[in-house]
Image (cartoon, rainbow, N blue to C red):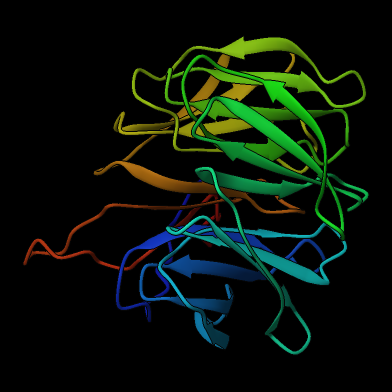
Length: 260
């Protein structure tokens, strides 16, 4: 079918990351350099909630049960928000470069990717260190958890995406389509496809089991965030798109809607 894009406007600085509410397929949360975290309804395009945090937000993720949102900022500080009240309940600053963050599907493990090429595994909610995985030879920028709970994937400055067996904590596959540091990755709702993006002017969608590309979405700019919808094959994405005055647009798009 035909695809169409919708745009959601409101942030006053670049949208660095976004994530769908795992329990409500029409709600999406965004983290921006304007220090706010916002909740949107993708049907109306309207912002329903916002919280002002202490720094420039670059990472955001939902706990799989939809109760908490974790947000990371440029100062390696982690904030956990209670979704119902949309207020912070926990803050922690780390001494190393923290990039992307994720919960496992049961919500009792929390993952941090670091500038040292490692993945730090913490017990949640105490955030107690459990394991350190030497994942890549360069900084690990992003992480995604397969919604079936079998795998997680890590994207690195070495331009590779690695696929890990979550029960064994072993690497089982690598994806090599991108030529620039991997900024963002996401599994679709069945765990069969993985989207990855960078400064390459396309988003790669590959089959998790074969490692082969099945589709590429052309982009006008480097991408900061790609995120599959938790129920449908809809991919939200946000990048460094500029307006006609060469300023950040603060816009994101959704690929995969069929036009009527």
